[in-house]
Length: 252
Image 1 (cartoon, rainbow, N blue to C red):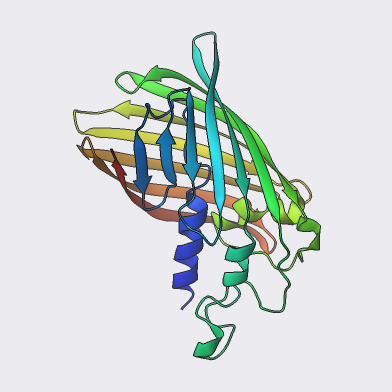
Image 2 (image 1 turned 45 degrees about the horizontal axis):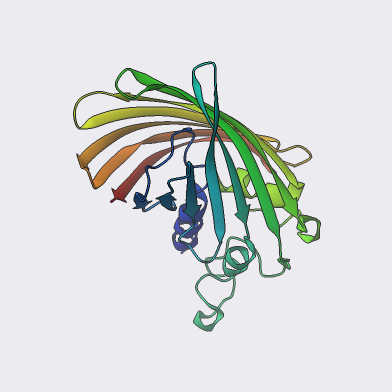
């Protein structure tokens, strides 16, 4: 029964930190997918993203900045409010179904306060997909009111733990990179990595490396599938995982 809340929180969180490229959507273009937020491109060199999962509201803006030595540059800011989603995970199947702990990823004994987090990052990209496009990024996140959250209320699962750690540690530092290259008219491959540093936490780091094959079905849809390798430290110790990945994206 834990599969349902795990998939829900995975969907919510994988929509964050989803793009390491400094390139923005063109004016009036919209994109949405299963595991990524809704995105909209503006004409003034900016792009907004809104999490479509209402249990964990978040919104971000990415803006173009001046190029640096041939690198296209951008900055990104994001605001999150995780409280409704974390409270839902204390009884995701509803208390009326019996045991309130059924399927819970956080014990109902813990109080979940109202919390916010603010994230900022800088992104640089060079090249193009035809010959190879490299992107590098670095950033940080700060949490407000996380000190009222118990250190024992963590969700000690891959992907989820590092992205929620800011609410237990008040600070997270992240950096990463990706390489995108076109294979043929319809296919690209993408290799990326992300590193999360969690100062003061019982789990202090997490490393994720992903490889994906992207199939451009048409100008309005594409599929991606691959793997994600995760190695990190959790409150109970270090662990590594290898997980399959997939997504379906639509744009118009």
